[in-house]
Amino acid sequence: MPRTYILNYLALLFLTALTTAVSFLDMGPFNTVAAIGIAGAKALLIAFFFMHLVDSPALVRVVAIGALIWFSILMSLTLGDYVTRGWLPIPGK
Image 1 (cartoon, rainbow, N blue to C red):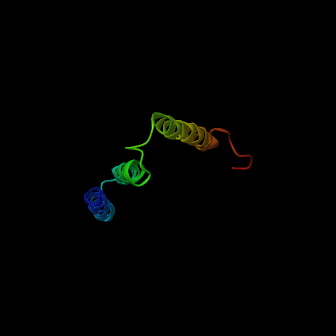
Image 2: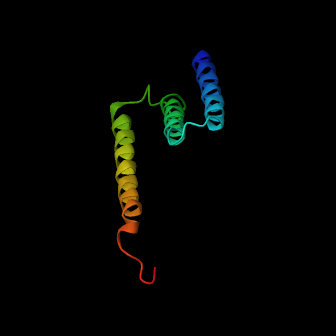
Image 3: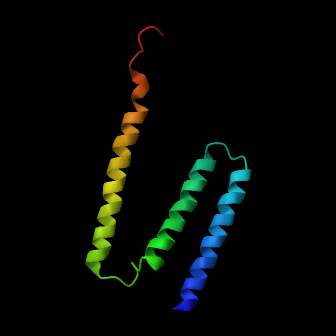
């Protein structure tokens, strides 16, 4: 068990260093994609090992998946509002 936590800790440290390294690279719009991908990998490591989703019963996993689905619904509605903000002309401009 301590070996799992140590490996998880080292993986999180590596991903944090990778995030820092990617921030210094100029990849254009892919900087955001890389940062979000690395953050997602770190979130999965934390959820699986520190929140014990690996060893949890099926109901806990279903609730975690439901939370992710609900979060993605909320984000898609928010981004849908944000993307369509400039469609209407502003009077006086």
